[in-house]
Image 1: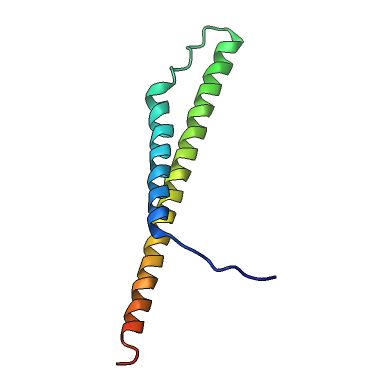
Image 2: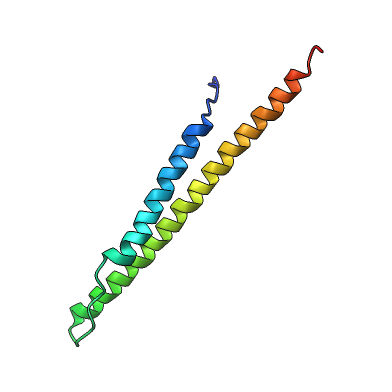
Length: 98
């Protein structure tokens, strides 16, 4: 199996991280003000089921938003790590042959 070179673009990683942060914010923030509150149970079975569903969707969306934010942070960390490695390598090569 032949290996292909890895091409990394830290600026693109940072851009994607920003997009993920925006998605996470909209996902969590949109639900905070976007979903109507679940109905108050009036004795109808559907009311209680709908309230449970609304709570489940909010929980799910909050977890997905948190996961997107974590992924954005990991991308930023990776981009910064690649830049730091590049800076170290450039510093070592700058001293070669002098």
